[in-house]
Length: 112
Length: 124
Image (cartoon, each protein chain N blue to C red):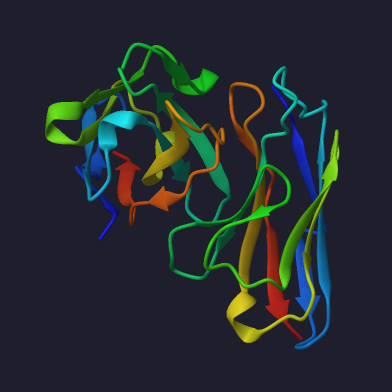
């Protein structure tokens, strides 16, 4: 199975400042079709998960443009350009290049 | 409104069975892969199973193979998860989610619609 490793696991962020989450996979996430199926999800306290980014860098409609995804191969990053209070929650990366789909451990973002 | 609504969770003894249901509305259910994702109390997300639009291809997490069965009824816009031989470690909130992969476009694993979740507790 592909192991997804996120860092940090806990992210104390400052309002208005940038924040970044790293996600590394144990194998390349490039699929035979040339695409990379690496997705990011946000789970706010008490809510169901919500998709933020798919295929590394495609932001979902309705997701603020302060969120961006980047990376390739085995190294990926979710960046928030200016943290806002509504960004509090847990962020997960997930690979879908290979069965079984696997999630990272989650990164808990809190406001300092 | 596009939505997924799960039902069927509850308390069950170890070794018991439970069937979860997920009702889909306001999208062409029969065109999409669908999946189940679970979350143990205070823990992270774990993918459990996925099923192709025609129901003929199913994928499972190793730890549930042979115990869980994913199925769907496209005429009823419904997804199911039959869970047998339940263990304490299966205790979790189970989410139904639409895998953003259809016959026209496929973004594997990009679960874009999630239900509210249903809690399954396995305990004596």
